[in-house]
Image 1: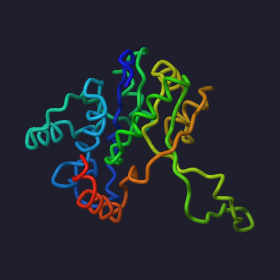
Image 2 (image 1 turned 90 degrees about the horizontal axis):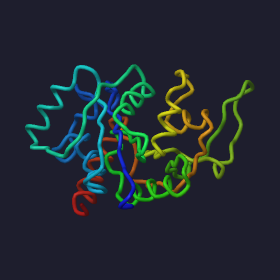
Image 3 (image 1 turned 90 degrees about the vertical axis):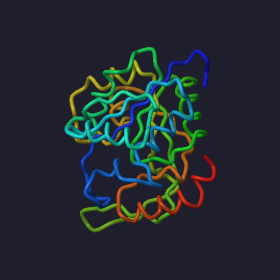
Image 4 (image 1 turned 120 degrees about the vertical axis):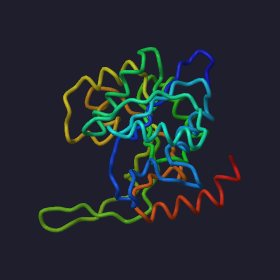
Length: 232
Protein backbone atom coordinates (compact mmCIF):
# COMPACT_ATOMS: atom_id res chain seq x y z
CA UNK A 1 0.00 0.00 0.00
CA UNK A 2 1.27 3.45 -0.89
CA UNK A 3 1.73 5.59 2.23
CA UNK A 4 0.16 8.51 0.37
CA UNK A 5 -2.80 6.66 -1.10
CA UNK A 6 -6.15 7.03 0.68
CA UNK A 7 -8.04 3.78 0.29
CA UNK A 8 -11.58 2.67 1.00
CA UNK A 9 -13.79 -0.32 0.37
CA UNK A 10 -17.53 -0.58 -0.17
CA UNK A 11 -18.73 -4.09 0.67
CA UNK A 12 -22.08 -4.68 -0.98
CA UNK A 13 -24.29 -6.83 1.23
CA UNK A 14 -27.59 -5.19 0.37
CA UNK A 15 -29.41 -8.18 -1.06
CA UNK A 16 -32.11 -10.27 0.62
CA UNK A 17 -31.81 -13.23 -1.73
CA UNK A 18 -32.12 -16.70 -0.23
CA UNK A 19 -30.95 -18.77 -3.21
CA UNK A 20 -28.06 -20.08 -1.17
CA UNK A 21 -30.51 -21.66 1.28
CA UNK A 22 -31.36 -20.90 4.90
CA UNK A 23 -33.73 -18.46 6.56
CA UNK A 24 -31.39 -15.46 6.53
CA UNK A 25 -29.74 -13.58 3.65
CA UNK A 26 -26.51 -15.37 2.82
CA UNK A 27 -24.23 -12.58 4.06
CA UNK A 28 -25.32 -13.37 7.64
CA UNK A 29 -24.94 -17.15 7.39
CA UNK A 30 -21.83 -18.73 8.93
CA UNK A 31 -18.64 -20.09 7.46
CA UNK A 32 -16.43 -21.71 10.07
CA UNK A 33 -18.73 -20.44 12.81
CA UNK A 34 -18.58 -16.78 11.76
CA UNK A 35 -20.97 -14.86 9.46
CA UNK A 36 -19.75 -14.68 5.87
CA UNK A 37 -19.82 -10.87 5.89
CA UNK A 38 -17.30 -10.77 8.74
CA UNK A 39 -14.86 -12.88 6.70
CA UNK A 40 -15.22 -10.40 3.84
CA UNK A 41 -14.64 -7.36 6.03
CA UNK A 42 -11.60 -9.02 7.60
CA UNK A 43 -10.08 -9.65 4.16
CA UNK A 44 -9.86 -5.89 3.55
CA UNK A 45 -8.86 -5.09 7.13
CA UNK A 46 -5.94 -7.52 6.83
CA UNK A 47 -4.85 -5.75 3.66
CA UNK A 48 -5.01 -2.25 5.19
CA UNK A 49 -6.10 -1.83 8.80
CA UNK A 50 -6.42 1.94 8.24
CA UNK A 51 -8.70 1.89 5.22
CA UNK A 52 -12.29 3.11 5.41
CA UNK A 53 -14.74 0.21 5.14
CA UNK A 54 -18.37 0.90 4.23
CA UNK A 55 -20.83 -1.98 4.52
CA UNK A 56 -24.13 -1.73 2.64
CA UNK A 57 -26.86 -3.76 4.36
CA UNK A 58 -30.46 -4.46 3.36
CA UNK A 59 -33.02 -2.23 5.03
CA UNK A 60 -34.29 -3.76 8.26
CA UNK A 61 -31.17 -5.78 9.08
CA UNK A 62 -29.05 -3.14 10.81
CA UNK A 63 -30.02 -4.26 14.33
CA UNK A 64 -29.49 -7.91 13.39
CA UNK A 65 -25.98 -7.11 12.19
CA UNK A 66 -25.23 -5.11 15.32
CA UNK A 67 -26.26 -8.09 17.44
CA UNK A 68 -24.09 -10.46 15.37
CA UNK A 69 -21.12 -8.16 15.91
CA UNK A 70 -21.78 -8.21 19.67
CA UNK A 71 -22.12 -12.00 19.80
CA UNK A 72 -18.92 -12.57 17.82
CA UNK A 73 -17.04 -9.71 19.52
CA UNK A 74 -16.39 -8.34 16.05
CA UNK A 75 -14.78 -4.91 16.42
CA UNK A 76 -13.27 -4.15 13.02
CA UNK A 77 -14.17 -0.49 12.36
CA UNK A 78 -16.75 -0.03 9.59
CA UNK A 79 -19.60 2.26 8.60
CA UNK A 80 -23.03 0.76 7.89
CA UNK A 81 -25.36 2.28 5.28
CA UNK A 82 -28.71 1.10 3.96
CA UNK A 83 -28.90 -0.55 0.56
CA UNK A 84 -31.17 0.39 -2.30
CA UNK A 85 -33.55 -1.26 -4.72
CA UNK A 86 -30.74 -2.70 -6.86
CA UNK A 87 -26.98 -3.21 -6.59
CA UNK A 88 -26.57 0.05 -8.52
CA UNK A 89 -28.52 1.96 -5.88
CA UNK A 90 -26.71 0.21 -3.03
CA UNK A 91 -23.29 1.17 -4.38
CA UNK A 92 -24.53 4.70 -4.97
CA UNK A 93 -25.55 4.91 -1.30
CA UNK A 94 -22.15 3.60 -0.24
CA UNK A 95 -20.32 6.15 -2.37
CA UNK A 96 -21.87 8.96 -0.32
CA UNK A 97 -19.40 8.00 2.43
CA UNK A 98 -16.39 8.18 0.09
CA UNK A 99 -14.35 11.32 -0.65
CA UNK A 100 -13.06 12.30 -4.08
CA UNK A 101 -9.43 11.89 -2.98
CA UNK A 102 -9.68 8.16 -2.30
CA UNK A 103 -9.11 5.03 -4.32
CA UNK A 104 -12.21 2.91 -3.73
CA UNK A 105 -12.80 -0.79 -4.20
CA UNK A 106 -16.33 -2.18 -4.51
CA UNK A 107 -16.59 -5.80 -3.42
CA UNK A 108 -19.33 -8.41 -3.17
CA UNK A 109 -19.93 -9.58 0.40
CA UNK A 110 -20.51 -13.04 -1.09
CA UNK A 111 -16.83 -13.30 -2.09
CA UNK A 112 -15.35 -13.82 1.41
CA UNK A 113 -12.14 -15.55 0.32
CA UNK A 114 -10.56 -12.72 -1.69
CA UNK A 115 -6.82 -12.80 -1.06
CA UNK A 116 -4.60 -9.95 0.10
CA UNK A 117 -2.41 -10.27 -2.99
CA UNK A 118 -5.37 -9.68 -5.30
CA UNK A 119 -6.52 -6.64 -3.31
CA UNK A 120 -2.99 -5.23 -3.46
CA UNK A 121 -2.78 -5.67 -7.23
CA UNK A 122 -6.19 -4.08 -7.81
CA UNK A 123 -5.45 -0.94 -5.79
CA UNK A 124 -1.92 -0.53 -7.16
CA UNK A 125 -3.14 -0.87 -10.75
CA UNK A 126 -5.99 1.62 -10.23
CA UNK A 127 -3.52 4.21 -8.96
CA UNK A 128 -0.92 3.45 -11.62
CA UNK A 129 -3.29 3.53 -14.59
CA UNK A 130 -5.76 6.10 -13.17
CA UNK A 131 -8.68 4.00 -14.35
CA UNK A 132 -11.04 1.24 -13.33
CA UNK A 133 -9.45 -2.13 -12.51
CA UNK A 134 -11.33 -5.42 -12.42
CA UNK A 135 -10.04 -8.94 -11.72
CA UNK A 136 -11.00 -11.65 -14.19
CA UNK A 137 -10.53 -15.39 -14.60
CA UNK A 138 -10.58 -17.51 -17.74
CA UNK A 139 -13.61 -19.59 -18.73
CA UNK A 140 -12.80 -23.30 -18.58
CA UNK A 141 -16.05 -24.58 -20.08
CA UNK A 142 -17.17 -24.66 -23.67
CA UNK A 143 -19.80 -21.98 -24.20
CA UNK A 144 -22.55 -21.28 -26.71
CA UNK A 145 -24.44 -18.12 -27.62
CA UNK A 146 -28.20 -18.39 -28.07
CA UNK A 147 -29.43 -17.13 -31.47
CA UNK A 148 -32.76 -16.85 -33.29
CA UNK A 149 -31.96 -20.12 -35.04
CA UNK A 150 -30.69 -22.01 -32.01
CA UNK A 151 -27.14 -21.40 -30.80
CA UNK A 152 -23.56 -21.12 -31.93
CA UNK A 153 -20.21 -21.86 -30.37
CA UNK A 154 -18.12 -19.05 -28.91
CA UNK A 155 -14.37 -19.00 -28.57
CA UNK A 156 -13.87 -19.30 -24.83
CA UNK A 157 -10.34 -17.91 -25.18
CA UNK A 158 -11.95 -14.53 -25.82
CA UNK A 159 -14.13 -14.69 -22.68
CA UNK A 160 -13.36 -13.68 -19.11
CA UNK A 161 -15.41 -14.09 -15.94
CA UNK A 162 -15.66 -10.95 -13.83
CA UNK A 163 -14.83 -10.79 -10.13
CA UNK A 164 -14.54 -8.10 -7.48
CA UNK A 165 -13.10 -5.94 -5.97
CA UNK A 166 -13.54 -3.49 -8.80
CA UNK A 167 -11.30 -0.56 -7.94
CA UNK A 168 -11.46 3.04 -9.19
CA UNK A 169 -10.30 6.55 -8.46
CA UNK A 170 -13.25 7.56 -6.29
CA UNK A 171 -13.85 10.88 -8.03
CA UNK A 172 -14.34 9.12 -11.37
CA UNK A 173 -16.62 6.42 -9.99
CA UNK A 174 -18.76 8.89 -8.06
CA UNK A 175 -19.18 10.93 -11.23
CA UNK A 176 -20.20 7.82 -13.17
CA UNK A 177 -22.84 6.94 -10.59
CA UNK A 178 -24.58 10.26 -11.14
CA UNK A 179 -26.03 8.71 -14.29
CA UNK A 180 -29.58 7.34 -14.41
CA UNK A 181 -30.09 3.67 -13.60
CA UNK A 182 -29.99 1.25 -16.53
CA UNK A 183 -30.93 -2.45 -16.16
CA UNK A 184 -27.83 -3.22 -18.23
CA UNK A 185 -25.66 -2.16 -15.26
CA UNK A 186 -24.58 -5.52 -13.86
CA UNK A 187 -21.47 -4.28 -12.04
CA UNK A 188 -19.44 -1.15 -11.39
CA UNK A 189 -17.36 -1.57 -14.53
CA UNK A 190 -20.49 -1.41 -16.70
CA UNK A 191 -21.50 1.87 -15.03
CA UNK A 192 -18.00 3.29 -15.34
CA UNK A 193 -17.46 2.21 -18.94
CA UNK A 194 -20.72 3.81 -20.08
CA UNK A 195 -19.41 7.05 -18.63
CA UNK A 196 -16.08 6.93 -20.47
CA UNK A 197 -13.87 5.40 -17.77
CA UNK A 198 -11.26 3.01 -19.15
CA UNK A 199 -11.29 -0.52 -17.71
CA UNK A 200 -8.04 -2.41 -17.06
CA UNK A 201 -8.16 -6.19 -16.53
CA UNK A 202 -5.93 -8.07 -14.11
CA UNK A 203 -5.71 -11.76 -13.24
CA UNK A 204 -8.20 -12.82 -10.57
CA UNK A 205 -8.23 -15.82 -8.22
CA UNK A 206 -10.13 -19.10 -8.32
CA UNK A 207 -10.66 -18.91 -4.55
CA UNK A 208 -12.43 -15.58 -5.02
CA UNK A 209 -15.68 -17.21 -6.16
CA UNK A 210 -19.15 -15.86 -5.38
CA UNK A 211 -21.30 -17.87 -2.98
CA UNK A 212 -24.74 -18.02 -4.56
CA UNK A 213 -26.19 -21.55 -4.40
CA UNK A 214 -26.35 -24.34 -1.76
CA UNK A 215 -23.57 -26.13 -3.66
CA UNK A 216 -21.38 -23.03 -3.31
CA UNK A 217 -21.77 -23.32 0.47
CA UNK A 218 -20.37 -26.84 0.29
CA UNK A 219 -17.38 -25.53 -1.66
CA UNK A 220 -16.95 -22.65 0.80
CA UNK A 221 -17.03 -24.94 3.82
CA UNK A 222 -14.53 -27.31 2.22
CA UNK A 223 -12.20 -24.47 1.24
CA UNK A 224 -12.39 -22.97 4.71
CA UNK A 225 -11.70 -26.22 6.57
CA UNK A 226 -8.93 -27.48 4.29
CA UNK A 227 -7.09 -24.31 3.29
CA UNK A 228 -8.23 -20.87 4.38
CA UNK A 229 -8.22 -21.29 8.16
CA UNK A 230 -4.70 -22.74 8.09
CA UNK A 231 -3.23 -19.90 6.04
CA UNK A 232 -4.74 -16.80 7.70
